[in-house]
Length: 103
Image (cartoon, one colour):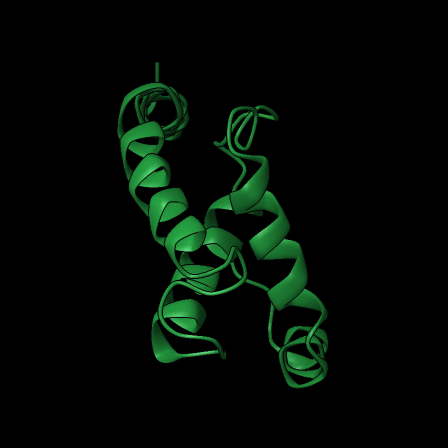
């Protein structure tokens, strides 16, 4: 097994741990914040830095090669949040113009 194979294996294991242990706890907390603020934003009633930062994290893991298809399985509100922020005109424009990431 060469170094590239080890890296792929590590990433696959890392993705499984993230999706089965880490993200469910994190998503449960963020879901609670969304519900407490009307379901659309983490803080207050309009887009904030917190929303953009959370969206950025979601965008990176959603496009990641090591995350499973069931990423949002138990968190429809998180998926809806991600999709709604993604559709905002300025965010959409940025996403269309940005360089691809290999994360």
